[in-house]
Image (cartoon, rainbow, N blue to C red; front, side, top):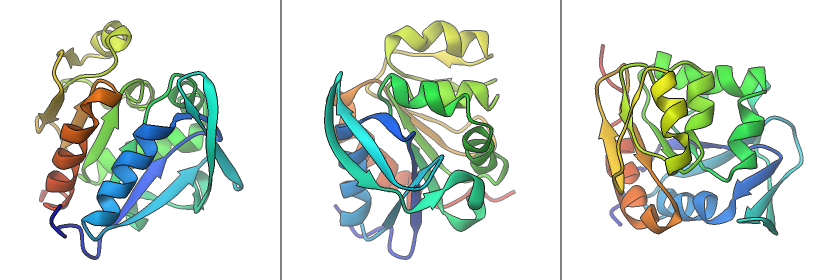
Length: 189
């Protein structure tokens, strides 16, 4: 991949437990290879326990805590999936506010699999078109969004660029798209 993210810091928001490992590590590596600086943000200090579907996988050191930093500290946001990860994040006030701030600031956000649950809670999918794990389509529709079954979707009909994908098998397209879109920076008002 090209080094299009030189000088950019990308937040990866994950709950203390339940993130799907490949949906964290694949995009993380893509950001690094493109010259960006990924940072793991969670709801508390310590380590994030990743999973390979329902089995424990590796754990990762948290760089920043959502309640102690803001979107101003980053150029873009990645919301990996895993069923438990976004389900926990959407119940945490600081994680939801942190996520919403990227939309308020016009900064690009990329989300995969079950990750849109956090977006639904932040009330940022209204009028947007995105994809996700198929079981979220009713949640997205009930929150005012439009769900599509596509490998990767770029939605520009809001305050920021929103990149979404369905599942781990979409990671290659998801990673290429988020690197390209994150390289463009925030939307100009």
